[in-house]
Image 1 (cartoon, rainbow, N blue to C red):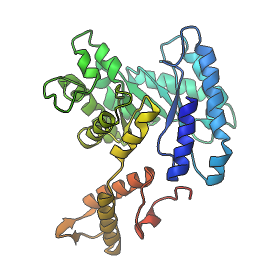
Image 2 (cartoon, rainbow, N blue to C red; image 1 turned 90 degrees about the vertical axis):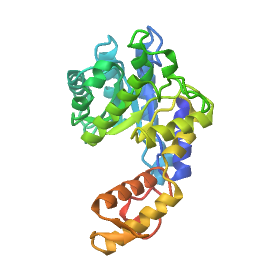
Image 3 (cartoon, rainbow, N blue to C red; image 1 turned 120 degrees about the vertical axis):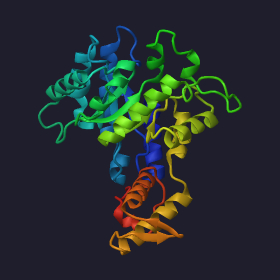
Image 4 (cartoon, one colour; image 1 turned 180 degrees about the vertical axis):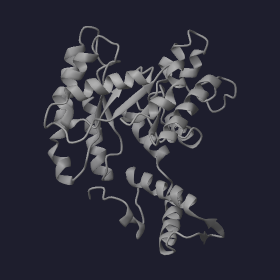
Length: 321
């Protein structure tokens, strides 16, 4: 966790914007019996980021969250008291794993709100929800629609495991490029269906779909290829990493190309000059539907540290330079 926080700080300085979140883990990061010690460490680390003077001086805003235990786990209440009660002012979100129903979200929200101390925050803590079972996928649309839910993440390994062997273990991995038969996480029908349902639920509710991990830790080619597939074919706008070496390949895959950014800037500039009336660019018609598409592309470019050309740069917030 410390290494991830340092990398986040270093890359924020490099790109002029915080290009990835760090989620401090109380769930899988804690040994059995060590849950309270882990929660105290998470709270302390979160608070340390809140006072990182070198980033504050640069005007850079960091995004650090905490993953607690599931709402039905014995450690959940202590997690909330220690992490939220001790570090609510430093947290950008709370991640809740193994959410099965809308009622689980409501339970989490009530506990989190009760733990925030007076004066700690001026806004409510958003929730990032992990969808990890067939039942949760079935309810993804109503879970995503909850106003406090900011993002849904797909928990691939728990999802596959929940099928009691009905889905092969290969669906937890990524097949070789030359392999056209193995049912991996991008080709097994049940896994593909779950990913698409979660992405669709997020887009329907205006929330962020976050793709699952790739367990091939150090193969940058596999990581980048998987991230590109998640973005281009499955509609995900973010992706989890489980090792610092995965972050740059994921960022590269989710970053718009320079050619796309240049085209988007030209279209948005001309649309603005035309008072957002239909225009033609390179012999193609563009109207408000495509204006919206290219506007979102420029937003994503700005968020991932890309150069946004003048004069459309004025439409997008400063990255702290």
